[in-house]
Amino acid sequence: MNYLPELLIQFWVDYYTLKPDVRETYGLLRHEGRHEGEDVLHDPIATWIFDDPKVNVAQLAKSFVACGYMACDHCAFPEKRLGAWQFKHMDGSLPKVFISELHVSLFSPEFQVVGQELI
Image 1 (cartoon, rainbow, N blue to C red):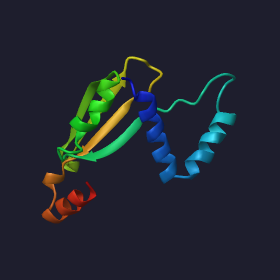
Image 2: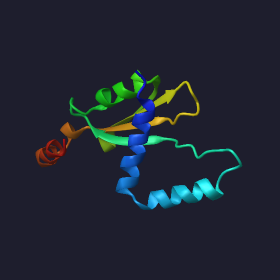
Image 3: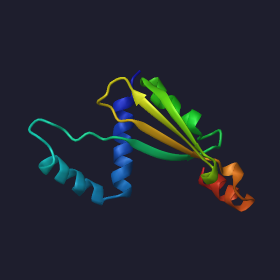
Image 4: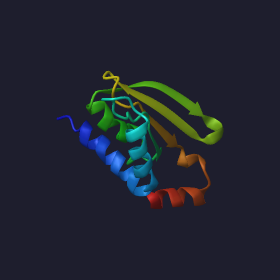
């Protein structure tokens, strides 16, 4: 079952719910920033997660991989205690996906407690 359209719509809904001014900006882009017949493409989708097994990159990536995305790049940022992965779909009209994973276990115990509370 390909639930990618619903997943992408939900990301968009979550985003403009958190950032209400995005809806107005998007409307202006659709009206003024496109050629006749073109639509505004969303690229990329970027998300930040924790390295907890319940919500880590492996968990989040499952939904995208099931919809045809493939991991194509990984970068490590040890000074930031962060890893980042890029996923692409064979259909070039679909947005790239970047997942950044914060290595919570490398932070102070107090930070780890807060991280667990957010999960």
